[in-house]
Length: 128
Image 1 (spheres, rainbow, N blue to C red):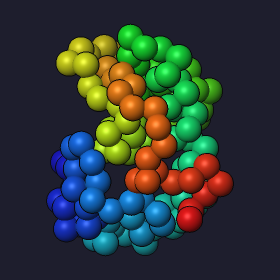
Image 2: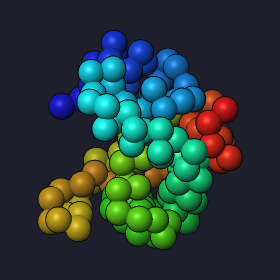
Image 3: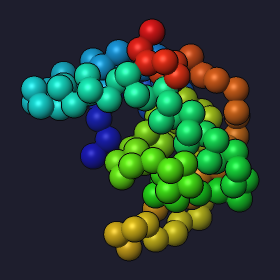
């Protein structure tokens, strides 16, 4: 289920109204303490992960599923969750196609639509 705007303080589907600039923007206010700890752990790495995923989408103009982007970028399992951030920032868009992911479940195929950096992504060096 997609979180509500009030849970993150931003909007979804085409552009966030607030940048993802700290760990508090990754976990919802209602999430348990373990989720907030995980958000604090991943925050310094997000810029590098997002940049690697963007590079993968740039190299495959016909599109990639989140699992494919993660694999092509040489990232660990779980990095595919960052694809939604790229989508919310307006950098990638779904093509309407679906392909099976590693688990055999359908995943949307995304293509790069804007390769310029977004103010809504973490900087490559970590949190601003």
